[in-house]
Every structure is written in structure tokens, then in C-alpha cells.
Length: 196
Image (cartoon, rainbow, N blue to C red; front, top):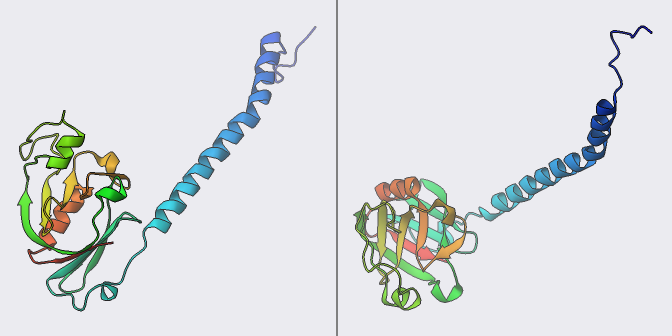
């Protein structure tokens, strides 16, 4: 018997491998479709969450600049005095009880700020350290902080980038370190702030 050199030899192993491929094909295709659906849903959520505001709906004049932080869409908008506006994704307070809304302003700026938990944080988390030095890898304020006129409230960076886009803070607004560094440089003390 002479075999055709072009056609493969049919063996039990070839038959089993071929059957396994045929059986698993719908599962692989379904998994790929599910992955595409997840990516599409995620992109839709992210795109729709970046709703921008007009500063004129909240303030009479630009003044030294304006920051509006929307705790629902988790985005911070920053306008400089010349009207240049940029958007940044944020982390927001983990619960409505920790969320403060209204008008405030930037009263102080610090590079590599130190951190100490507030009295209410110490009550909720007595295991937390009493103090973390500025510049420490585990400092929750990141590399920069804008101190607001409300006691204990800040707009700051974070070392834990998983928090951005989530309800994850104890009251503050968090940004990626590279974003807070940009906002920090563009924001003078006296900048108007509104948390909504």
C-alpha cells in the first residue's frame, strides 16, 4: 500500500486531537466574545462617566482658577485663571457619610506631605499608624496635597493606583501622583473649589 505524501496519516491520536478542537471551538469563541463584551461595556462606562461641567454653572468668575470635583462621575475638572481646562479621574469617599460637598478653596499646598489619621479614622481603624512621614512609599497622600479650608479635607495623590475611579477614600479626593503634580503646579493658593 502506498500512502499519498500530501495527505496526513490518519491515526487515533489525530482523530482525538481533531475532535477535541472541534468540541472546544464554541467555548473559545464564546470566551472571546465575552471578553470583547466586557471591554466594550467597560469603555462605555468610562466614556459616559467623564461628564464635564461648565464652571459658569457654579462660579461667577474664574478668578485665580477653579476646581470642580464630581463625586458621582469621579472626575476632577481644573481651570486655570486663563481658562485652560483639564480633566482627571479621581477616587472619592467610600460612603455618603464621609462625603462633603459644597464650596471651599485651596488654603495650602505641600510637596511630599506627611500623613496622620483623623480622630474618626483612628476610631474606625485603631490598627493604623499614628503618623507616616512625607515621601514614604506607604504614605496615603502621595507626592502632593492641596489643603482645603475644610479641616481634614484634601485633594491629593495616592501611591495605591487601584483606588482611582472608585469609592475608596476616607473623605478626600485622590488623583494619580502624576496628575496631582500637574494640578499642584497649575493651582495657586486661593483657587476656588466645589465638590458636588
